[in-house]
Amino acid sequence: MVDSKAAYQKYFTKEHDLLRQAVRDFVKKEIIPHVDEWEEAGETPMELYQKAGELGFLAVNYPVEYGGVKGDIFDGIVISEELCRCGSIGIPASLGTHGIALPPIVAHGTHEQKEKYVRPVIEGKRKAALAVTEPVGGSDVAALKTTAVRKGDHYVINGGKTFITTGVHAGQFTVAVRTGGEGAHGISLIIVDAGAPGFSVSKKLKKMGWWASDTAELYFDDCMVPVENLIGEENKGFYYQMENFQHERLGMAGQTNMISEMCLDECLKYVKERQAFGKTLSGFQVLRHRLAEMATLLEASREFTYRVAAKINAGEYQVKEVSMAKNFACTVSNKITFEATQIFGGYGFMRGYVVERLFRDNRIMSIGGGTTEIMNEVISRIILNERKV
Image (cartoon, rainbow, N blue to C red; front, side, top):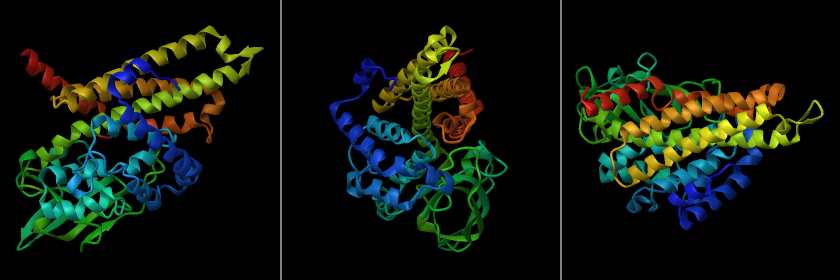
């Protein structure tokens, strides 16, 4: 395994090591034997979510009074990294959707909402999903069209969402809706139960990668939701969601680095075994230098991600830096996954090889959680303001 002991020791404690080993054992026992089956099925079973909840892996960094477990940002990184080692990124993506669906409830919800919608999810009894993206708007969150009109003690929701991870099997959804005028100022977040009248879910969408996570379209046809399901204040939802993006993008940067690490590890093993023209591939200078470049890029990306994580953990505002970290991690993984499949040659194009799956799973990382272009827009606006150009 490619790793930097110095960087590791700077950010992770002995307690983190214990958690890492526990998750690693969980992955080895409960996930790896079933990866191919779940990939073909197009979903991760609820039973795995329940087991992760029973072991407390879903509760880290959530309020203790609602069933959570104390921890820091690096506990979450440890869990995410080790789940990625199963070699199918759709599995940690499926297990981790509560990480983007619950934070607005935790930060701005009522006590009753937290008891009803946070506790059972982190206990592994129910899946939660975030529903923001729409068929037309894509990354333009402020332009969403799904409406919620208050009628008495209910909101009536009309519209649709797409590309919703865990959308098929989630029991609850944190949904971005328009309750006011155009733009960011008219958006609210509302919790919608899967069984709400007027709510329906499409069949699983077929994707290039992340096969083991179910992805769906959601439909709201005069969907009735109680007013008490509004999260925080009306028309403040856009800003609640912006608070959460920093952690989502950090998580994606970390997962992307793990894709790079696993591909590099596979290559290091392969070049020592594969024979060509009378010697192993590691005997060719051009491949050794290519591996050196891959390792250098990964080292830089991982250190950058960890440094940004440490600053966020210390309470520093890191929107610019986390956007940079996500983009850089994706740039690195795009190169490393391409190089890995090239080094494997024809085998890199074959199902059953980890690098083939990771090549496919990697493609979404530059799109999900904010596209590369959106990240560059965020970065450019901040640096122009900072430098007063």
